[in-house]
Length: 308
Image 1 (cartoon, rainbow, N blue to C red):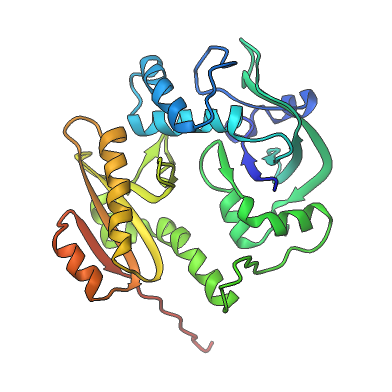
Image 2 (tube, helix red, strand yellow):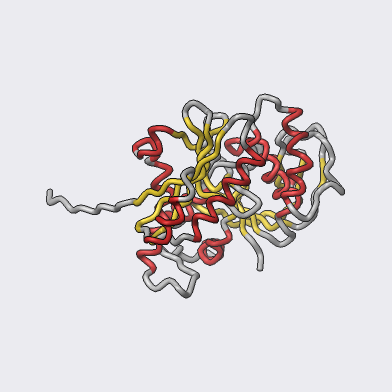
């Protein structure tokens, strides 16, 4: 089954016109070497090899930024398969659609030198026609994001049909409206971060003024939010559960914390965790007693009508 990606064609779609004219998508990240034959099957291997290269060229950057940049570069160059579909902002509020038709090639001394050939479609997607969930995902920070979970909606949009307001492909979900509300939890928390208890002490990780700490990729899956204390001495892993949290989430958070400690933390930086859920139970409370570096928060949702 084909996958779908949102790919930026340079910062603020700076190189969109060149990509459209030349039938390619691409990336840069300041690694000026041909990666032909150097793109392993796993992004983790690529990151191990090229994070030191990236940091050598950009000593002012953090390990977190290096990991994100190398991960994006590998995905554009190797992770996206032939036949996959990319949606690319054209800088005017619309998205151009293309199918990836070939393998990686390198064009030195040109914008976005790490390239993939594509065939652009005549279809143009208006951002306003997308569901709110898809708009949020395509508007996420970073060069690339996987939007395959919106496959059904994207295919209908490309085909010229109206996008459904709520799409749930998981047959175990009985209440689609409740499911849609739960999917907004992460975006709501990010947008209102400064007003939360965590926001008083931590900032969502930023690079060059843009938040890159949401859905940060690790070798055990993407962590929901990566934050850093205002004094830069602690990194915080935040895991969101849209309902009751079980004790299994403690192990999940610890795995993410282990990755952050070994791969991202600078010398002297501590790593801690936070679990946010609607409810807890005795099992998770017992587990957390033994893990003082992980705290638990319950979220509350309030809805009120006021007669005008």
